[in-house]
Image: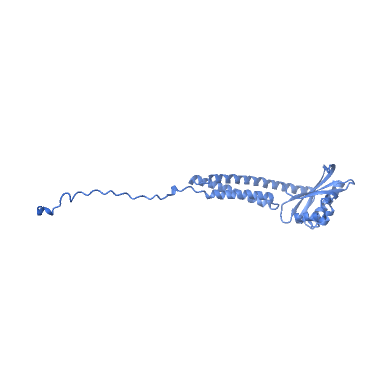
Length: 279
């Protein structure tokens, strides 16, 4: 080989470089905000809880004997809050695509039902209370806050039998509200006394019902009615009135029933206390 040509590069040594194929970097599949599953709207859950509470509170108002008015006001307020939360949650679900549309719908229905029931009972309670107060005013019997707890005034237009029943009902109510249960037992008729094996059975019932909580009472009416008692047609005299307990402001009514015995005397045959106006 020619030494002069030995150091000269050949065409093969200086061939054009081949392009290198570079693999593109692999993209990591990171989840984006749009790929996350829809979440349950929190306001819809809050609306459901609030609406259920309002419905349970309404049920409690039907069972409670005290502060019904305040409980019903709470029902109206809480059900209204549940109604507003339901509407807001529906708007958010439509805007963001959250879950919970069914929950918010159920909450909306429950809140509407609770609100309507609360309005109906609250208005009826106001109406009945007004009627009872008017009945007390028209009867001419003024409630007395002294130890007697009632005026005990007997209207002059009552029959002799009605006056007798009126007087005995007043004495009976005075005795039980004053805790004089033995004295109240003496006003019971013979047939009613037979239902109790001993006097302590009668007093145990009164203590269980805690009738001494009666703060004041007023007799509002005395009426006669012919009924079948012990398979016999007998004249029944019903003495009705209103009363209140010491620990509440709700006005309730009571009734004491008498029958006429063979000698024309009245006989106490039964009574009912703490009757709610809308029962």
